[in-house]
Length: 90
Image (cartoon, rainbow, N blue to C red; front, side, top):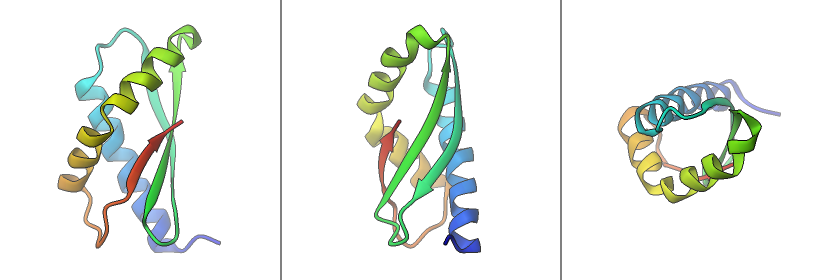
C-alpha cells in the first residue's frame, strides 16, 4: 500500500523525468513518462515510458539508459527528498 507521501513523490519525479526527456531528446519520436514506481525505502525508482512509433522503443530505452546519471542529477535539482533513488527505465 502506497502512502500519500510516496504518491506525491512519484508525481513529482514523473514531472521531472518528463521535463528531462523533453529537454534532452532528439524529437524523432514521442516519449511519454506514464508512471514512476518508487520503492518504499526510496532506494530505487522505475520510470515507465511509452514510445511512438513503437519501432523506436529500443533506441529510446538505450538512450535513456545511457543518460541515467544525467537524469538522476536533473531530478536531484528539482525534487526534494531525503534520499535520491537509483533510476531504471522501462
